[in-house]
Length: 197
Image (cartoon, rainbow, N blue to C red; front, side, top):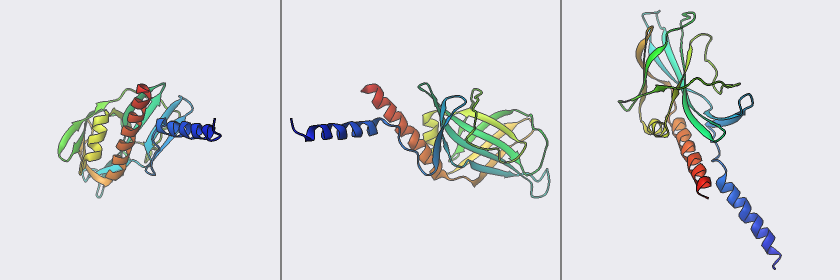
């Protein structure tokens, strides 16, 4: 038997191992293990921010909505969620109104979002931009993520008992959403490859 055989076997094993690992995150995304729940969280480094002028509240007042996708995996189950935080330049005190409708307008086409089940994490990947405001989670399907990544123009429409309106992009990097969606697709492909082996 040649002395090269053990080295060749080791290299093959390393290459096969690399093929079955999850796709690495990019400079726009990060991941961590939430120790309190044992959940692996993949997320954008910064949420996208959308705004609408709110002159009825005060001169130069604006309402904002920050949103960003997350991939949560625990015990073989993967969930894709959209983290949403509504906030304003005007302190309105505690906001209790529930959002009755949340729609993403992707190149003018509506994509209605479904409220996600309540989740608990010891550490959320995104921080509330200001004190006050309101957090919500929405379920995303992989195809919705892909649609979000493909869209040239994204607007947010929110309807609730205390505020209704269209939010325009302010700090919303479409490329980051695209890279997040590509990472999700790569991890799904790697998971399918492991199942088929």
